[in-house]
Image (cartoon, rainbow, N blue to C red; front, side, top):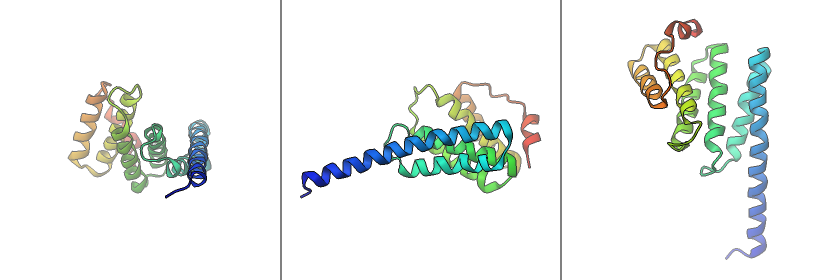
Length: 160
């Protein structure tokens, strides 16, 4: 049987871990914003590392986990667009998909998250030509309620 002091210690450790995860998330977003303004590769790498650490510290059932996964996924998308590394694109899609699975249907950010996932599928379709990715992209855009007719030429310009 766990004594009370042990239980209290575990609760404090969990609270510290959750607080640290929250503190790591914010700089990750700030690094991504700065990367988008200045194009500094070190900021892009930090925009991935900070959310990775934050997610590692975030319990699976934590209400902010979906947002943290989304932040990580968009960081991978940015790095894919910068470097063209297929592994980054696959990681982006994986993180964004996990984010969607954890995002409630009525969540105000669900549509934007679906749109980013759809863009990931479209990028992979343009890279590999896999019809399933194009179908997934269409479903995600349709589900999001956002415009499904994003100019494919714009996306082709990003293709590496």
